[in-house]
Image 1 (cartoon, rainbow, N blue to C red):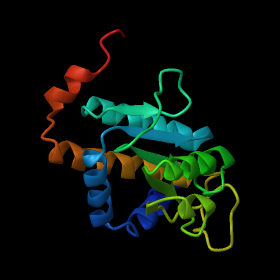
Image 2 (cartoon, one colour):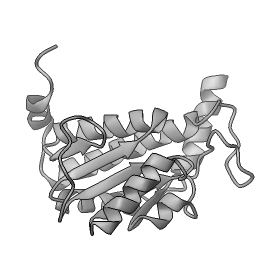
Image 3 (tube, helix red, strand yellow):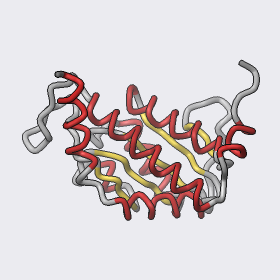
Length: 181
């Protein structure tokens, strides 16, 4: 069954990510004055969903490139998502953020990538990308689907840990959920 194969692929990737690393990232997010998030394409959609969840949990969070995103500054943190770690706009933003003295967390399959080099922390997600590089996990899924799925679950895990650190209940989060729908 195809669904079983996809679930096994996801489990293979997630089993290689240490939960302590996710907890450390949740702590870094909680300590940040404001959180900025960037990603392009499908990685960008995962990044935006992460930003939305963090907003529900009470974080001051912005998506880079949106018209209401302010300037980044001291005490702020950037989460940069790129499966390959080579997406030019994401790498450039990470480099610029680092040059301003702000912390950068890279979320990528490639800990040797330009994005990883421009980051203070790396969430290594050992999934396949659209490039199908030699050292990547094999997958039956097209493009970066496996990376996207795993990033979504890892971000949800970080959000759960963040909510526990911040003592944010489901009721608290629901109060921040859109009421204009």
